[in-house]
Amino acid sequence: MGQESASAGGPPKTVKQQRAAKREEKVAQFKREQARRERNRRFGIWGGIGGGVVAVAAIVALVVVTSIPPAPVVITGLQTFANEATHVTGAVDYPQAPPAGGPHNAVWLNCGIYTEPVTNENAVHALEHGAVWITYDPALPEADVEALRAAAPSTYAIVSPYPGLGAPVVISAWDAQVELDGVDDPRLQQFVQAYWKSPDAPEPGAACTGGLDGAGRIA
Amino acid sequence: MSDQTPAVRRSRWPVAVLAVLAVVVALAGMFWIGRASVVGTVPGSTSADAGFLRDMQTHHAQAVEMAMLVRDRTDDPELRAIAYDIATAQAQQSGVMYGWLQQWGLDQYGEPMAWMQGGDGHSGHGATGSGGGEADATMPGMATRAQLAALGAADGAEAERLFLELMIAHHRGGVDMAEAAVRLATQPIVRGLAEKMIAVQTAEIDAMQQLLAERR
View 1 (cartoon, rainbow over the protein chains, first blue to last red):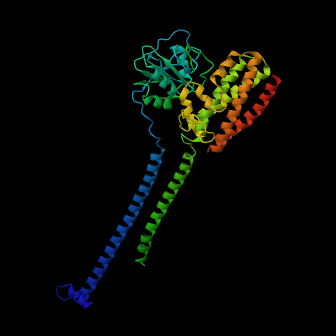
View 2 (view 1 turned 60 degrees about the vertical axis):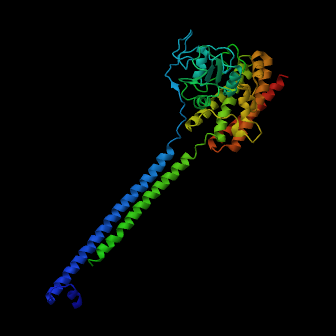
């Protein structure tokens, strides 16, 4: 003890002074201890809160990330419309060529492969039932036309020539259309995948048979 | 005494924090597992469930077409009734199958018959060869375009006989597809529908064979 106080330096201390110093030292030590506990306590609280927040955030992130559906294929050049679905008896002046929906005849065109142009007003009714309509420039080489027929779905699809078409091939469904560069344009299958019997059509799955066979139906 | 109280307080905090953390993690984990099990009930786009739901719609559509054709070509009340029954029942089932695919966020389009490949050696790729209707001859029991044309051209008893022959074959093919679905599908609701199709169409095959025998 005596050595301790002597090592503190300064003039020699009385017993009273030594006791006071000891007390102060004890108080200081207690305060340091208290400060340390306080630090630990705060660290525990904030660490716990931080850890909890991180855990919750991680779970939320996991749920959100895995519930996002895979991004649908973006079809370049896709056009969409908002046509109405009424029945009419006469010819219709359609805003799109070929028409991609709109007023139509009471009788739908039977789905299939046609060698001759089909009537717009009947074909649009087939689109209403969920069919896709593949139209091609009549000047297309026969081999290309054959490739197009082979690529078409076996049901709920119409393939027909369309004079005055603005592209080699145009594929249409109700309220959707895309102009294709040729018969091997990958957007053909992308469009079929997305719009064949699409829920966007007013009556998908309604009959595409038992209606009207247009001229030149070969399949 | 004064030393002990803070010591107890100090040791309580980490325990409380750990307890809260454990509860949070446990709840989150249970939520995650529960959610994953719900998400897990949605079959994929290339699943047998999805393939069956798509192809059976196509198969049913032809049954509806044939039933409507014969109703327009005969006055026989029994034939007209069974045709009405098949057309409306199968149109309703098609709507159900369409709706499940839509509910599960699956495209209606898929490679025809790919889900049954390996079973009977039929290839879905054959379907893209000819296009526009003939292709469906690769689906079991489907009538060809020529057979449909013959039914369309027939009348009266001849139409009835043709219809019965075609529809018996069509139902048999449908039962084959439904049996494959019972084997391959993972969703109980899909297998349940397939089992009902097997039961009903098997009974209808018997009834139609009876009707066909009466007309020979």
